[in-house]
Image (tube, rainbow, N blue to C red; front, side):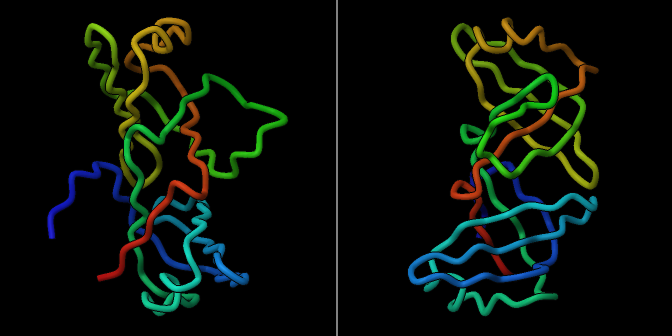
Length: 139
């Protein structure tokens, strides 16, 4: 299966915390960062997720927010530091390519936000991803 989702980060499950309806899945990405995915309990069971299982974390580019520095007082758990390696500005939107340890992410943000943040190729950013926006795939 080929997916339109550009952000596909390989990793290994380190823990699964099942709840009544949802499960929190902790992942160590191949680059060493940690990521949390909140998926349905049914999906976690169907994927047979357990510590040591290989997964790909999938995130739509429209679900990646960017910060130019550390952010306090924010509920978003997934914070991946990286460097901008590509910046394409359209009339309304911008596509931002970010290299993170072990991979690459794309963020689709407004052109206005890119300008307000002063983004440029080579600048450091932190990619912010809500755990509920991370999907998981197994081989």
